[in-house]
Amino acid sequence: MNTNISPAERTTSRDIAISLMSMITLLSASLITRTARGQQIETIDIGSNRQLFVDRLLIDKLDGASLRLHHPVRREVVIRNDNPWEQYGVSYMVTFRDGGLFRAWYRCDAADFDTGKRSSMTAYAESSDGIRWTKPNLGVIAFQGSKENNLVWNGPGVNMAVFKDGNPAAPPDERYKAIVRNGDIYGLVSADGLHWKLIDEKPFLTDRPFDSHNTAFWDAGKQEYVIYARGIQTAGVEGLGMSKNFKSGVRSIRRSTSKDFRNWSALELIDLGDRPAEHLYTNAAVTYDRAPGLYLMFPSRFVNTRRPTPNWKHAGVNDVVLMSSRDGLHFERTFMEAFVRPGLDKNNWHDRALYMERGILQTSPTELSMYAMQNWRLDSVHIQRLTLRPDGFVSVHAPYDGGELLTKPMRFSEDRLQLNLSTSAVGSVLVELQRADGTPLPGKTLDDCVELYGDALDRPVQWKAGSSLSEFAGEPIRLRLMLRDADVYAFRFAE
Image (cartoon, rainbow, N blue to C red; front, side, top):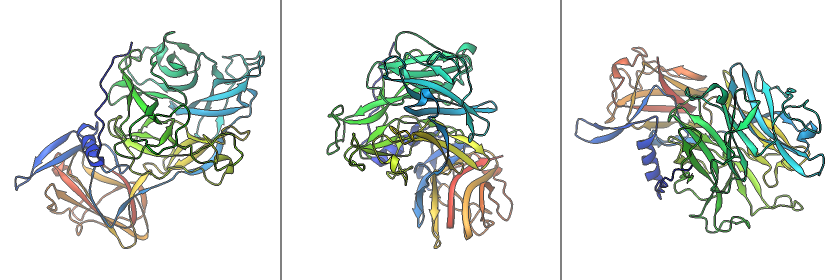
């Protein structure tokens, strides 16, 4: 049974939205610091959590430096439609590490043996490295009279979104959970991720539309289950091309939460601040494991007013964008530019040809792997791996002539500062610690800092007197970074 809640008040100013995020973020309980002059300054508590520059939450000033969006690199194809039950497509994959394996569940489309009509099912694959994937014969679901296949669900419901439940109260026979769309949203449970059953014949959520891929997971930080589902945004959509089913709005994303995976709050549109409204297909929402409390989304942006392939049946083309949040409801679009473009592959230049799949895997100490469905509606449809350096979504970048970053006041724990950075052969990064009022800390000035250069994910910052910061832990401090031909992707205070 749904529990109605009032939608969060929608902000109308980008600056107000960022300020609100600062107050309600899971990572940072905002405190008021009073300087020696009596001035009140908001202080953000970051503890020892890694901080990424995907938004401006921690940034006070950039001078000569800027935020730079980085794009993943396309690698090999990992899933092809090479079985009869995958003939008409593979898509909507969800993947995560489960013990010593990477596991994945994906939609596959086949023609019904008796009627010839298209039917959608869920298949399973696994990998030891995230690169080479196998499709084991599971013997679970019959297809055309045989169970020698990798199918795990054939309905009711499609577009399955699986997750492993991190809730310690979850019973063993419900360790894996999923949602499917059968008009409305239904819940599934499993002991092993392969043998599934409906929780109830009644749906969780009935406030349609729910087409495309809705996602779900256990939010460990908030100790609740979350669903991100399809929705319609009606505000601020003037001038956008509307389809016949969306005459009064654009495709967007809604959120619902639950404490027990049975009773869900009323769906609420996520808040995108004052950014221009665009059609957003799917969401691929995740919590980013390397930075607790950070939510990332990779929606497919659909432009239905263009027809790059003139003879194609349907108008439209799409790419993938990056959004981030500190509370799971208010999402920042720091960049309106595409995170993943259709690229040189001409088979990606038609409607709905490119979707990001859900899941970010660390496939080596220096590599994150993500996955994208490409070439939808064509025989060449496939799922391809994309790679990025860890935390490498956005960086603070400075050119050869140099630039500066100054953070807002923060409280930290632990003893040493580490940077995820990359410089050229002549580039460098220098770090100064300041009090909340901007006064440099003795022994932690730019002149005291040992020059940093090279490429590293967790480079310790050293000053002439050493790297220990334990005497300043718990105090409000600012970071001042001087960069030259360099990128800084993230930082953290560690042991």
